[in-house]
Length: 297
Figure 1: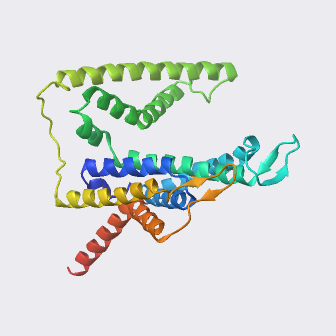
Figure 2: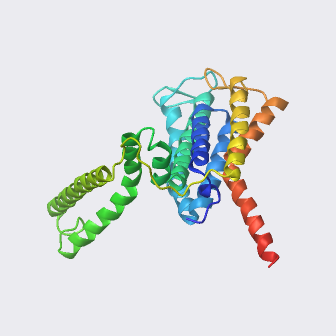
Figure 3: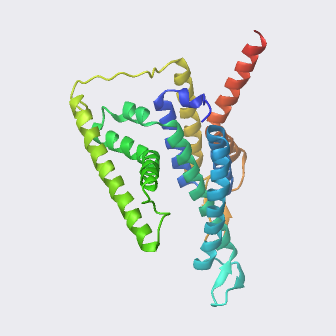
């Protein structure tokens, strides 16, 4: 992952940003807002993870989007604009196709946003924000967020060790492969339980969750963070006010009806675009500043 200027901000700024974009992505089904959120999430994921994000989006997210968009009309037959009939006699409507595409975009967008969240909001940041408020829950959530990458690494280590003694899932017949797979799963489960117990004992011995306990932190809420938080508050207020005024309204059944584009709705769309693209804008400004500093050396 390349160095991200937005990730270096205070954790409260990161958390407020991701909480807002995720909430708006799940609440608003207007095509303009869906497109803005999807493009912004894809751009930020590529900026964070480079080729790995491009591969992830093309190999997993794009097929998922297409499948979800195609499956919905086969099961959802609501809508007044009938395009054709299936062999079963069920109609395929324009409304079900558009709604399927909108739902698919929303689902994929939320997944991509969460991939960006996992790259920026580390377990240290999460514990820093919620360790004093809800220590037990914050510890559990931070451990859960680390499970997938840690478990993938550990299961690779176990599989390599089992392969060296001829007990990998790729060796032997079908029954033997199944037994080897169960053996690896058993070892993995034992390691996970032992690791959880060790983590709990370690945190308890350090006084985690005790009243009055202090903790070391490198995070400082400076002037830049105050300015970004103020900008976030203004953008979130504009988008929320626009949604409350009905500028994000989108009806797909029984007929498609979207809120008209007006001067006020355009302001909301622009604010939503700036909100979603804020990390990309910050990174671009930082790179321009860095190039300017280097050019003057």
